Image: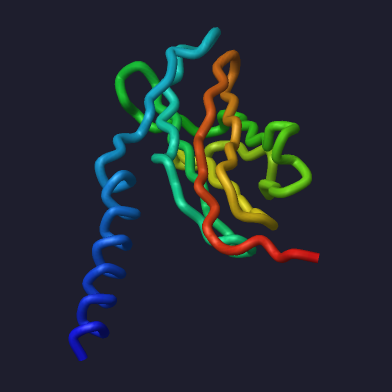
Length: 135
């Protein structure tokens, strides 16, 4: 019984360590963009499970912090990960200041999604968990 309790404690401790780095993350704000002066609030660093969708939402505001509609947002998987992951849709126009896409990874590992609004591009890192099948 003692070994079961010890293993359970170790498992909970490991799970807690895996969540702590993400809970302290603050969203990244980039901008102002050119020519419109938008501020882009990127999603926080994320974790996803292999073969499970992860929704990524970007918020776009004006210089006064008001949400802006009808702003094109591009989501792009860098070439190094393009064969292992995708985003759908790749281009979204903001509604109520938000644009969302779904990230889907076919393998585990550290990946990224590039997000572009007007002249500004930044990267959101995603840690994909789960075993990669061996063939």
